Amino acid sequence: MATADDRQRRRVARYYRWLDRLTFLRELRGQSGSQAQPVHRQLRDPAGGPPSAMLVHRLMIEGLNLPASPRVLDAGCGYGATALDLIPVIGGTWLGVTLSTVQAQRGQAEAERRGLGAQLSFALQSYDDPLPGGFDLAIGIESLIHSADPARTIANLAGALRPGGRLVMVDDMPEPDLPPATQAQLALFKAMWRCPVAPTRNGWVAAMQAAGLELEREADLTPLTLPRSAEALAAPLARQRRRAWWLGWLGLGVREEADIGGMTLEHLLRERAVRYRLLVARKPEVPTAALDVPATAEA
Image (cartoon, rainbow, N blue to C red; front, side, top):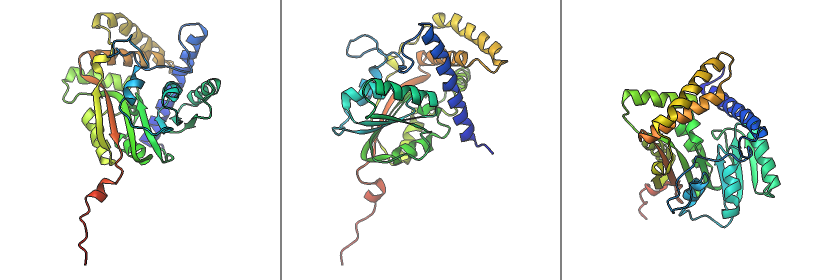
């Protein structure tokens, strides 16, 4: 009998399988960039440079004291865009985990094409499955929000870190105590993007602390996002809602649902009902429990 976790894995895998197919069709028509290296959302550059979809990578590694050749885990890696961008910067060996066969295949092919095949490998699995240990850094960018059990996910990632290793996540985190109308918008976003829980900032921090991690740094990146105005979103949102309704009868409409989720998220970000946050947590060199054990008196 399938568990809720099994069903969520299938939903997420199917979601990205369909998005890949539709992206590939646009690629053939010359309507998109490289489908082997999709990018994250555009952010304003606080240093004054042009908006960039890769800026999140720079913000993510700022201030990290990493070894010369770190072992890095990318939890929910997609096509490996983050590794492909950061290996030339920080080096190391990277493992990307994804539920999508096609993402792993395209990502590995792109790594080989760039001469990075020895530094980047992919595993077809959930970030909740057993992971090899000893990572200096584990990252999750816009991926951990898909978790059906965030506390278990964080505990599993924490277990894969070496003492002194860091977990860095960047994701959309709802504010607490939203009014009913905004809660309905949030529920729509979560359904369209296959995000069953989507914890608040405090929820993620509590999960980190329960896993023995110490919050080291955080930043609210919401002011750097570029949500469109309600007027600019009205027509495309209405169009995609109509298309999703009709295509839903055929079991299709994944692209339309993804667009609806993205545009709904723009509304939520603009209203500051959801915030795009960066959290950095560190695994202590000595387990916290060990620090609390009183010293034994000498005889």
